[in-house]
Every structure is written in structure tokens, then in C-alpha cells.
Length: 308
Image (cartoon, rainbow, N blue to C red):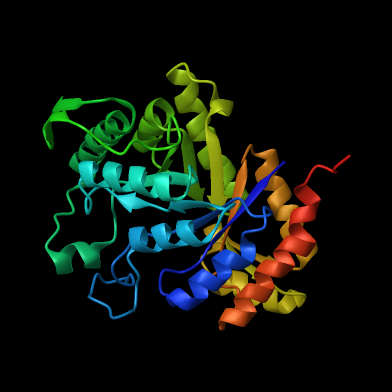
């Protein structure tokens, strides 16, 4: 059975987020993911205005008003957040949710928020080095009574993480597409996430498979999720225009059947979970909610095992 999750923009007002979370908390959807940013992104790295809500306040609130749907960070950057802070926050939200959190982590990338807040965004190699140290520390804090670590970027001495998370272990997801991050994912993560249309995502999955095999891990033991920009439309000419204008490597535009066919390709490529962002699902809260309902009624049933 393929899992389906949703991803509301961090610029949605809290009233919409709460209503959406309660609306989908019926056991149909797997997870409500949320991005960890402090402002909208810009192509030139300039500062931008926008009501971008802080992820962990939102996830804790959603966890408190729901009972079934999981919550997850997509993803928290280890440039912005110290690993001890991430581990303690994740453990607390896991307690609030009664064991429904997935901790998604990334190395950090958004230039304008790092520049505006004076947070160093290192070059690629040292940034990934720092990420690997942070991931090791977070894993240990969530699973061990005390953590001591002496690295190039972090010094942790006899550190506890209490309260303990409900889940043992609390799943850690890494969002990546690059070869070196794929090695870290294969050796240290429970889940892997990527962007891409079916062909792009399948190629990235091949890289992950190779990394798992190189480091003696069963590739199927790594839960895999993928997201794309979905544009439902019954107008073929409109779909063609969307594909020509939107990022082609991460866009799926077309009828319900065409969306179903595309998701089938994800399944064939070994993906366990499809995440549906709301960024392209409508210009109002009601339109976005209606589109999620359409996915629930017309797309998801194609990937559910029949009940007996």
C-alpha cells in the first residue's frame, strides 16, 4: 500500500493549518509535513517579507489537535538549529503527539535567511561534514542516556535528552539528492526524501540503492518519500502550458488519470510515500481543501489494498 501525505505552505495562516489538520485526521492520510524556514525564498538571495510560521510551534500545535495523522519536518536545517535543540524539541513533540513525529533533517540551503540572520552557510563540503556530525549527535541523544562527542564542529559532553521520545527509535529522515548525502542517508537514516517527477526521482533512487548496497544495507529497509508540484487539470493544452512554464523536473500536470499513472511510476521505482504540497492546489483555503479531498476520493483509492 502506498502512503499519501500532505504539505501545506508555511505561509498559510494558523486557522487554515488547524482546520486542514483536523479535516485530514481520519486515518486516510499518513503525515502532515511542514517546512522549516523563516522567510520566503528568493532567487537572488535578497530578504523577502512573508508570514512564514515557525515549524516546531506549528507541529506541536497540530500534534495537540489531532489523534491519527503523523507530523514531520521537511526538513529542519542543521545550520540553523543546534543538534541538541533539535533532539530535545523532537523528543518533546513526539511526546505531545503520542509517538507520531518523523524528524526530517537537511544540511541547509536557503541563502536569504542565513544572510539576514547572520547564520553561516558554509561551503558544500564543510556544511555536509557539519550535518553528519549533527545527525550522529541527534541520533545518540534520542537513543542513549548520555552523549559525548568531540568533532570539528560540535563538542557534546555527557549530555542527556529528556524526556525520552515515545518512539524507539524516533524515525529520522534525510532530504537529499547528492552522492555524499546519499552515503550518509544509507548509513545513518531511517527514511529518505527527494523532489522530482517520476523519471528524476527514479534516477535519484538508483543512487540511494547503490549507496545502500555499498554499505551493506538492504535498500528496502529505507523508507522512501517523494514530492512533486501537482497541477490537476482536465485541459490538455493547459497541462502543456503548465509543464512548459513550471520546473519540468518536479512537475506533474494533467487529469486525475494522468496523475494516477504518474504515481504508479513512483510506486514502480520503489517509493513508499507520495507527498502532495498545496503550493499549486488553489488560490484559496477552500480550493486547496477541495483538491485534497479530490486526491482522497479519486487518486488514493487506486493505491489502497482492498479490505476483506
